[in-house]
Image (cartoon, rainbow, N blue to C red; front, side, top):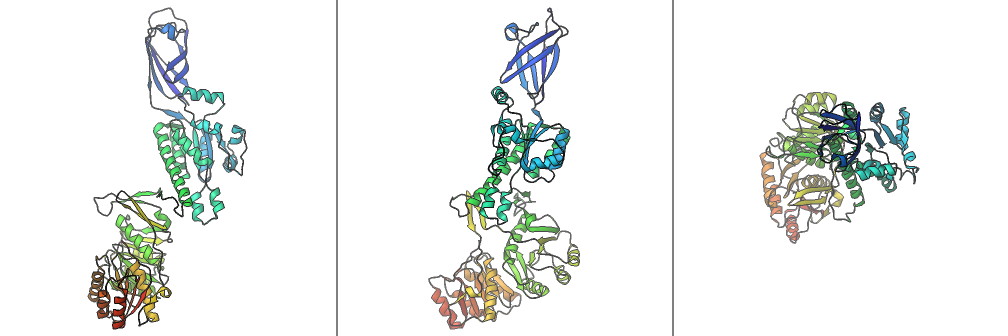
Amino acid sequence: MSAAFSAIFTAFPAPLAARAIAPVFHAGNLFSHIFILFKSSLPKKITYTSNQYKLYSVIVFSENYHKIFPSFLIPLRACKITRMKEVRKIRSALISVYHKDNLDAIVRKLQQLQVKIYSTGGTKSFIEGLGVPVTAVESLTDYPSIFGGRVKTLHPKVFGGILYRRDEVGDRDEAVKFNIPDIDLVIVDLYPFGETVASGAPDAEIIEKIDIGGISLIRAAAKNYQDVVVVPSQREYLPLLELLETKNGETSVEDRRRFAAAAFNVSSHYDAAIFNYFNREQSEPVFKMSLTDGVTLRYGENPHQKGMFFGNFDEMFEKLHGKEISYNNLLDIDAAVSLIAEFDEPTFAILKHNNACGLASSNVLLDAWKKAFAGDPVSAFGGVLITNRKIDPETAREIDTLFYEVLIAPDFDPAALELLKGKKNRILLRHLGTKMTQQQFRSLLNGVAAQDRDLATETGQDMKPVTVAQPTPEELTDLAFANKIVKHSKSNAIVLAKGRQLLASGVGQTSRVDALTHAIEKAGNFNFDLKDAVMASDAFFPFSDCVELAGEAGIRAIVQPGGSVRDNESIECCNKKQIAMVFTGIRHFKH
C-alpha cells in the first residue's frame, strides 16, 4: 500500500557528499530503505514514498550516528516515529459473488483505478463479459475448482494475501518468500441459504447453499480490516462504489472498520440461519434469533420509552398511505393479522389494544363491516381495522366516516383507495400475505421465553358434545366462530356471538366469572339480545357459576376446553337449563 515518510534532519557543518544513503532504518516493526538527498548543511525535510507503508512522521536524531547509520556523512542526534492516520490504497481485489446486479459499476470503477482483479467461476465469466481484465484464482493457487465447486478459494495464497499484516516484518517476509500477493479488497455475496430454506427446497439443495469459501473470505477480510476492505453482501455494493468514486480507491481505517462491522453482521446472521435449520427439532436448548432489518420507531409503548422494530415489514405489507407506524400500531397489526387468518369467508374485524372489539363474517363485505362496527362503535374509534377481502367503494364510504389508525386489506379498489387517502394520517396497508414466525418469544426476567405459535383451530367436527342438549348446525357454526375470536383474546376471556357476529366479549379479567359479567353488561349497553346466542371460553370453568349466568342471559350453547375436576357440575347445570355444551380439549390462554 502507498504511504509517505517525512524525515526532518538537523545538520551541522561538515564535509558533505552530494548524496547520503541510510540503507537501514529501524523503529519498532518498521523496516525500510530510505534514500535522502542533501545539497547543503541546512536543516532539511525530506519526504519518501514507499509502496509498503501507511503515513508516518519521522524525526531523526542520534549521538552515535556512525554506528547506527554508518553511511550518513552528517551528525544525527536521535530517532523517533509517530504513526499518523492510516490510509490504504486499493491495488488488488478478489470478487466472488452470488448476486451480480449492480456489480458492473464497481468492476468498471476498479478497472479505471487500475486495480488488479481476481475472480472465479460465474463471477469471473461475468467480469470477462464486461470486457474487463480478470485473473482466475486458479492461476494464483495452481489448483482448479474441485468437488463440484465446493473448493475454489480455500488456499493459503488467497487467505495469506488477505490476512497477512502489512506492518509486521515477519508477515511481509513470508508473503515475499511464498509469493503471496496482496489482496486489498474482498467482495463477496453469499449463497442464499435463508431464501432456499424458505422456498421449501429439499434438504440436499439446502445443504449445497451453505457457503464455505465465501463466509471464510468475509471473516478473514473483516479480521484484517486494518489493511483490507471487505464487502460482505449486495447491500454494501453501493456504499463501496461511493467510496471508490469519492476517494479514488483510498480508504481510511474508519471506512474499513465500518465494512468489517457489516461483515460480521452478515456472517453471524448467516450462521444463525444455518444453526436454526439444523436445530429445527430443538435438540440443542439454544435460542438464536437474528434479524438484520432494524427500524427506529418514534417511541415505544409510551413516549418516554425508546422503540425499534426488527424485521422485514415490507415483506408482509405495502404501505399505501399515512403517517409513520408506531410501536402500538405494530402490536395491533400483529394481533389483527393473526386473527383474520382464522377466517376464510368475507370477514371484517376491529381491534383495540390487541383485542377484537368488533368482528363479523358475511357473504357481503359491507354487511360484515356494518355488523363488526355495531359490535362496539365506541371502542372502534381509533382502532385498527382489517379484512380479508378487497375494499370496494361502497364499503370505503362507510369506513371513511370513522376515525381509525390503520386499515389493512389484501387490496383496494382504486376509487376506494382515493377516497380513503383523504385523511393524511390514516395508515392504509395492503396485506401481501401472512408470513408469521412459527415460534413466539418475549424477553422475560434476565432471558427469553419461547414457545410454538398457537396454530390449533377447532371446527365443529372437533367439538365433543357433553350435554343432553345437542348444538344445532347453526349453533355449531357460531361456536366455531366464537372460539376463533376467544383464542385471540387476552385471558381470562369470554366471547358472546350470534349469526357470525361478535356481540360482546370480556377480556383480560382476573376471573372467568368477571369476564362473563363484563361481556353480558357490554352486550346490553349496545342493545344486543343474547337469547339463543353462544358463548366461548378460552379455558375451562372451575365452577358452574359461569353456566348459571349464561343461562340467565339466554345463552343456548357453550364451547370450552373442559378439563376441570368440576366439569360434571357445569355439565349438570347445562342439562338443567337445557344448554348445549361441547368440549374441544384444547385451551387457548393468551397473556
